[in-house]
Length: 367
Ligand code: NCD
Image 1 (spheres, rainbow, N blue to C red):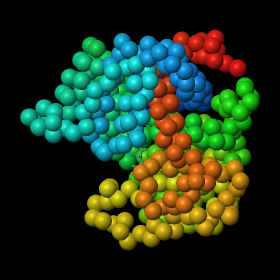
Image 2: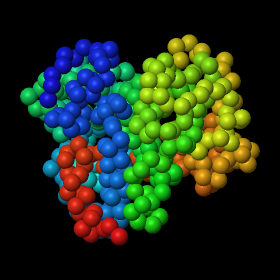
Image 3: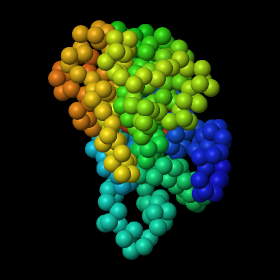
Image 4: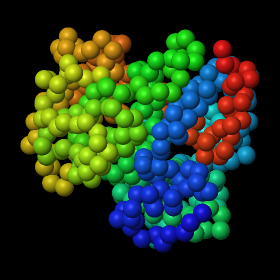
């Protein structure tokens, strides 16, 4: 494990940042979407799918609960969360890993003047992993470096870092896209998470792309699939950040920017909706933006491709018409559940029980 001071490291080369988060070349902390190459993404999708099948039976659930019953997790969520928190909690339960939570720092010794860094040092003594959601960009990465310097280091998983990244959401989004757009090569009706189902496909990102961390992380993962075309549909003021644009240009990803949704719907194979992230407004500046041009409505359904996949990380407001919920192309409820299986897969991988699960699957479950 390499060491790094706990200074801001966003200016370091990405490859260096990634290596600081690995242990012997294997993923250790999960902080940035750039840590995931294609092999690892596909492997995690397969693992999620296997865990999902194994968990269907009583015997399978018992097997899974045995895998991580000797580990403990801390869910440190000091920013609001429903799905990410609950799906990590459910993933811990599936894998038999007891967890504890801090969701409100006003109940911790931070009110007595303890620094956040000391809080993390303390947590690392009780738990075997920390899943962290925090409002400050870069904080989770800094804390991962701090943990690297401790005698007992434990993996830190980023459950959302300010406006910056949300890598585990991006993993479940890819898993959902794979399940919706992938074709089976192993067993009929089941996606096999091999091959590139996104080649030649158009994926649109819609809404507040400037401050939506889920889109930023998902773009990084999708660049691992050559041939994907991206549409960034957003008000000018909320268009995706220059760092992401520079990255996709460097990766030679086909992309376009648009400022209205209506005329783009018919060319999309997937549409990823997002809400206005106005909690990041400094002075209510987004109140003047007409967001209605970025609403996906039932009356557009006539233009949808038959195999379109509609995703949304949730929570939604008016940008995604509830009338679309019953359309088979709406994948956002499945997306919620997929998060639980993907996070169970990720925990298995982090704690090195993935090979045991894969063996078990091929012995007893593969058809
Ligand atoms: C998102 C988040 O927190 O970034 N939600 C989630 O994790 N499922 C999206 C949002 O808050 O809009």
